[in-house]
Image (cartoon, rainbow, N blue to C red; front, side):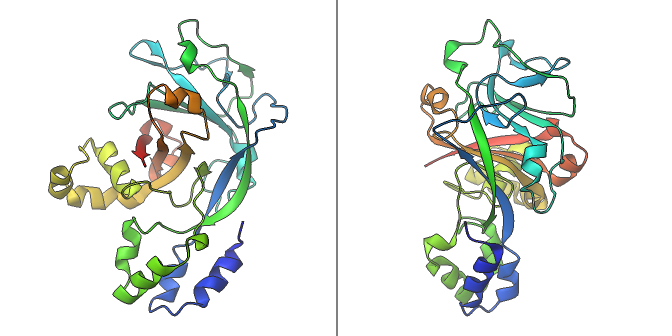
Length: 272
């Protein structure tokens, strides 16, 4: 991956009207890689799928009295080494559970725990076989990200700078499938707008967007890209059961993250 200095050098090779502003677009993120030839996965390691390593005082979450599907767990001590701006807690575990995904079901549960008494939690007996998967160990790497041309950040630029931004070679941008923090990789529209709509309970439609534009604009930049995942590079066999090939985006407002209030996360999906 390119270093921050390499990105800045490439930026400086281009004639911008607002070069300093464009430099501020560059923010760090954490790439998540999943190897095919899996090393041993130890208790508490960061991983997709498998059985969660939960503390004894945390029960498997349910949706409509049915057990949710375990998507992933992040060991924040493992993650913290790559968190340049120290945005996330530097210890503890984050667990991600989702209900059966569909265009109309974004129910999920994100659990933050600092307990040490972890144990591999067996699948609930009433959990559908289609919702049980082999675990995949995660490895991490620090990367740097720029906003996509689909996002509203570039609307602050002059016409000349926007044209230059569009003409930058695609290799200049780093868009990872599985990622923590940084700019999202949108497959459709600006992800922040959809996060704001989901948080406010507003339907993502042209009429509702127009009616609630001020409310959306007031909060959309408060969201942090907590966990972005590809349905094809996480637990694809689960998502294939629901005909979903897309990206999932978990977000949390900066205030809620500082207060460790992970009950206020939002989740959206975008399809290609």
